[in-house]
Amino acid sequence: MDAQPPVAAPALTVVGVDAGATKAIAEAVTVGGERLGRAEGPGANPKRHGLDVAANRILALVHGTMPGEQAPALVYVAGAGIDRPVHARALEAALAVGLPGTRIVVANDTMAALRAGTPDGVGLVIPVSTGGNVIGRAPDGRVTDRGHGIFGGGYVLGALAARAVAFHRHGVGRALAAAVREAADPGWRGRRPAPEAALLALSVVAAARAGDPWPARIVDRWCSRVTAACVEETARLDLGPAPVAIVYGGLADASPWLRARIGAAVLAGVPGARITGLAAEPVAGAVALALDALAGRQAGWDFTPRR
Image (cartoon, rainbow, N blue to C red; front, side):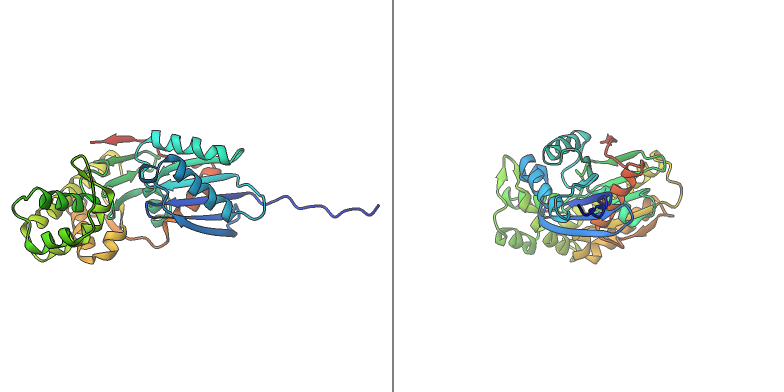
C-alpha cells in the first residue's frame, strides 16, 4: 500500500466579531496574522434583537469566515448592548452551544474601537453614535465607564426631541418640530420612544448648529458631561496627563461640527489628551483582541460601572 502523504494540522485560528446594532462583521485570521475570511450580516445587539437571534447571527458569521469544517480556537465578540458583565456572560453561554470546544470572550463594542485606535488598548474612547459614553481602560487592564450611556448619543437626542414635540413642550424650534413630525413614528414604550428615535439625531444636531436654543442646550449638556467624565476616568484609571482619546461613531462621521464639539469637550477636561479617530475598522480591533486573549492578554468586560 502506498504511503499517504502527511496531512498538515490546521493553523490555529481566531475570529474577531464587531457585533453592532445595525451591522455585524467577522474576520478570521491565523495566529500568524494570515487573513482567512470575512463575513458581514445584520445587527446582533441582544437588547434590540433578543439573545437567541443575536447569538445565531454571530454564529452564522463565525462559520462563514472559517474554511471547511475547521473550528476557531477563540472567538472574541465586541458587541453593542453588552453594557454589563452579566450581558457578556449570557451571550458567551449562548454562543458556546454552537461552538463547542471554542473559547469565547464577549465584551462591549467600544473595546474593539479602543484596540483598533491604540497600540495597546489603553486610553479613553468616546462613542458618538446611537449611544454616547466615556469608557476607559487602564495600563493594568481595569475598565470603567462613566454614565453607562445615559447622557448622550443619537438615541438620547432623538428621544428627547420626540418627547418634547409629543408633549408640546416649549422651546423646540419649528424646523426641528417639523422634522420630528415628518419622521417615521418612532413608537413608544411607555414614556420612552423606540430605538428608531435615534434617526432624529441629525435633525437635532443641525438645529443646534443653527442656533435653536432647545437642541443647543441638549448638545451643551452632552458636552459638559463628556468633560466631567474624561476628568473622572483619567484620574480613576491613572492615564496620565496625555491619554489617547478616541472620538468615533456614525453620528460623528455625519456631523463634523458635533465631532469638533465633543473633541473640545474632551480637551476642556484633559487639555493634554491626544484626540484621534479610528485608523482601522472596529473589527480589526476585535481581531487584535482575539489574538491578545489567545496570548494571555485578555481585555474582557469585567469592570466597575460608574453612575
